[in-house]
Amino acid sequence: MSERKPKLAVWKFASCDGCQLSLLNCEDELLALTGKIEIAYFLEASRATVEGPYDLSLVEGSITTPHDEERIHEIRRSSRFLMTIGACATAGGIQALRNFADVREYTSIVYASPQYISTLNKSTPISDHVWVDFELRGCPISKDQLLEVITAYLHERKPAIPKHSVCVECKTAGNVCVMVSHGTACLGPVTQAGCGALCPAYDRGCFGCFGPKETPNTISLSAWLQERGSERRELIRSFRNFNAYATAFRKESEALERAEATHG
Amino acid sequence: METLDRSGIDALLTALRERGFTVLGPTVRDRAIVYDELRSTADLPVGVTDEQAAGSYRLTHRGDDALFGYTVGPHSWKRWLHPPLVRLLRITPEEGGQGFTADSSDPGARRWAFVGVRACELAAIGIQDRVFLDGPAVDPVYDARRRGVFVVAVNCAQAGGTCFCASMDAGPRAREGFDLALTEVVDDDRHYFLVEDGSPEGREVLAALPSRLATADEVKTADRILESAASSMGRSLEMDGLPEILGRGYDSPRWEKVATRCLSCTNCTMVCPTCFCSTVEDVNDLADGAAERWRRWDSCFTTEFSYLHGGSVRTSVSSRYRQWLTHKLGTWIEQFGSPGCVGCGRCITWCPVGIDLTEEAAALRESDRALHA
Ligand code: SF4
Ligand code: SF4
Ligand code: SF4
Image (cartoon, rainbow over all chains, first blue to last red; front, side, top):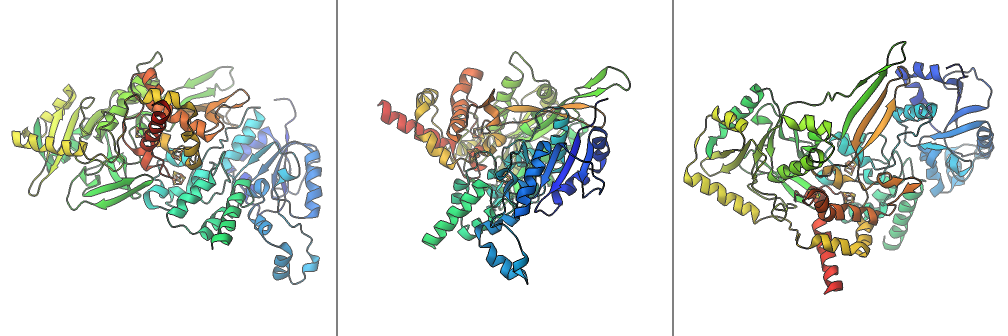
């Protein structure tokens, strides 16, 4: 290729850095990747940066401060293609638990001098603020899915990132279903695939790290689990996880909370 | 008909291995009976049985040493004949040149002996044979994997809680498509197997085993066991007129009703031994420029499945469940000459919320009667 290499930038907002690390974890593939794409801005990997505009921006983390609210617009303006990576960027992350509580009360408990804390009431996904071209789910994202999207981007083809349930991967792997064989609650049937059904492979229920799948029926799953002895409180905790603020999971936990308030 | 005693089954497994087969059969793993490689009869679920209900599967002890005293589990032989994930093609660019090489070999194919194949599963393999081999286009992956398989069928001495093979005329006795068929008898004082051969290769294998001619009493005992299994099915399905009922029932409110429960998780289609749908995905390697085409199981319960230009045709879950049930029990007959269901009950047991196709079909029949009586 004689043309210039596309420029890649990696941006961080409120997050733990785990998703960016997935890119560094692509040890074997990283060399091939840098042959095709110029890593222009990636502070976790190098302090040397190249100025924008960028062809592909990967955005990690959620928007939690007034300053971040501004910064994401700048990044959008300097990016041709913007992809969010991970549960924080796509759904607000675990820090979106604050969205169900009073953030001022939290800061007063956690910080000695809460007056120095400048924070928004809610932790929100990037797509609440700017147009997002592609969302990559997961807490953390899957390294293989990340490589697949970047490769697809470089070849101008559609990435193979299905929106179906974790159960598809679970059955593909030949696992025995934990729901059916021992009644363990599993979010797999309402969660998007991508992890390879990691938890069911270790005989545990899915925690929902990849967020709601397409057409998720959380009501039916909750009802079935409650008929079999799950407590509403447990279920609220299950849906209030890394993807607590993703619409389908949020609505389900709020509905369960309302039912709990009414019926106790 | 011949009789083998308990140790004859060890001899059978050894004979199959000596003939170069990779022997697969039932074994206990993760609190279920799955199919995997068998080294000896010790790997079989000795003395174990299963209790199945809609959305529930539990193992318990039988109180005897039966080798095949259970029904079907979450796996089916489809895993080997029509694998969930298989590479169809790898294209590698030639070094320095303009050309490329293409490799369409299937490294997963073996000469398998399937041990413990139930009558419903034989019927399901028969259905997939028609789908993959008898049509105008033969599926090369299925063809290569299917060709050399040696089938040791086991007639069901008991029916499971979600079984209805008797309704589908698919069991509990294996009638054809096997090399050998066993019926296990566990009496107070004796444990033996009646063996029937179904092919020249089966006869050859049997001839080398320590068997003897079955007595009239033994044959009668086995018949009685199979009759009692046939009359103790946990479920039943009335097929008479059902394709027409499903056709007329396109607008039935029952589809919306089942959609309130259905998770569109795809488990029912993944565990079904006759469901054959797949999709292909192309992947390419950044480093060496190689490209691969993979095939993986697909399901009519995903939106992507019916994606045409511009969007999915079946966005509602009710339309997806209707597609599934109507195809299985109705239009499959026009397409392949039989229903796409053998009554194994897997889709009922392994549905995480216990949706039961026999119950849905009965409800559709009931509302049809109310409308058209
Ligand atoms: S264990 Fe969970 S993810 Fe796997 S099939 Fe069962 S419900 Fe689905
Ligand atoms: S539709 Fe259900 S009962 Fe019928 S063959 Fe498939 S899994 Fe078995
Ligand atoms: S019928 Fe059951 S197994 Fe099938 S897609 Fe619906 S919820 Fe899943």
